[in-house]
Length: 430
Image 1 (cartoon, rainbow, N blue to C red):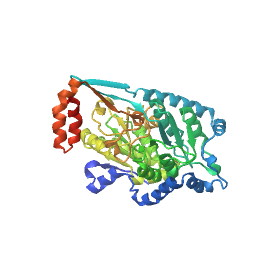
Image 2 (cartoon, rainbow, N blue to C red; image 1 turned 45 degrees about the horizontal axis):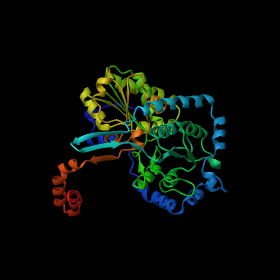
Image 3 (cartoon, rainbow, N blue to C red; image 1 turned 90 degrees about the vertical axis):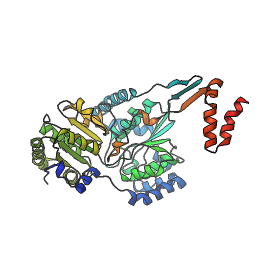
Image 4 (tube, rainbow, N blue to C red; image 1 turned 180 degrees about the vertical axis):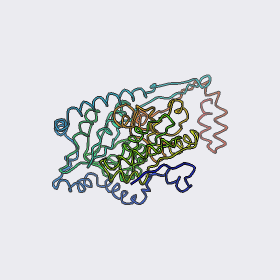
């Protein structure tokens, strides 16, 4: 395995399309299988999940699906106290950052004399947070999904996570959920968990919105229930783009690059630099360190399938490519990253300067790590308080205010063939 630098202008249209596409999967091939599971849960509820999880516990009962207080207490005894303390500190930072996102509860303006219009903010009643589990634990994802909802003022926050053998949930996940203030936790993962949250069962409550990262089966299920509930942006494998000029440190860049590709076999890491020497040195370090690194199968897949070291002819081309790529994570390692920041249009989360590596945002700086992937940063933002708030508008009109609009509304209503709309206005002056 060897990674080599390439010039952006040397990329063929087909190759550039491949770079931009990275690991975006066409999940249409699994849609019908997932649809059958979702529809089955909709019609039969808990029975479907019980049948599925008999692989973990033969005598499973509906009560086994929900985490008990005793399980949470036991989880604290299994998780290292240092990990618990770090989760608490991270939770404080995440909560503080998300509290800063809260808007005024109400504002209004006088549109014209006698017409008052405004907007109010209201939190959702109940939301569901999906937490990946099974072979790996992601307690940080619990904090990132539950805490913004808690800050927003959501009354009920429900988490679902895949259990392991014996219907046991990962203890670190349970501790994080307790720290974050999750109301209920269910040991139901994949499309079974998504469908249970979307439609409700005898055991699981129906929610208004489902958020959180997951595999392609979770993504497909979320897209199938969209409309029944709201969802966050579709999520794919993790990705990162590093943008640097002459000021970048090749050693730091190489380790940032490698840290990204250890996530998943389909993860993507891209370096875009205006300096050929930096590109060459980064490749040399990656190639030299590769044999001594763990998680080799994942690294090799990520490095060969979706990762690139690219040389731009100038910063304009580099920034243009960066905006087109619209990365989930963007590191800006330029001489003045804040000047560069003004030119960035599309990115999920932006890390400025040599002392802001992506892992700080993954865990503890306060920003959210549930982010749009696969160029979706062009139209989606990362998870925030706004995802759990609705913003109804209101208006109050005096008789004089309505009189000033009467002829306009009547004329437009009649032009659109809605005479009763017009009549509703005219009746107030008869």
